[in-house]
Image (tube, rainbow, N blue to C red):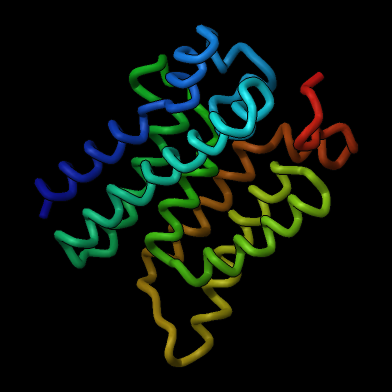
Length: 205
């Protein structure tokens, strides 16, 4: 079990460390995405700097970075803590990629992939609210925060229904992820509260 855990954690971290926004920006415009727009290596900043097509590509690839290792871990072992550590490693890889000087994104898309794989229905319910908030307010950061915070809330509420059951490790992981997301988005929270947060579709100042 120890060898299996180490393998999946390392594989997941190394896969998560592949910064698709950086690679695509280098390929298309020969620029470092971390020095453009908001400076974040993620899909939202890719949208600002490169446009819709590259942004969708980055989003999907970053989600796959979360889905693939977790599903593989779930296929080879029933140990919930291995699933959780594998998913966490993918997110850590995206946020602090070993290939790019440990300067990555905020892990939103990769977190979506991980949570959808582990707790599909709670993630789906939280995702609906998050997407609705983005359409209404045009604040991607608000949607990202709502997704992270509401996923553990939805999980707990669903577990009140007798037919729904999730491992304790999954529940703990969603809470930890919510706290980490709040910390990673702390500057966004400050701008949201002050009304200066950048909206989607508007050039970054």
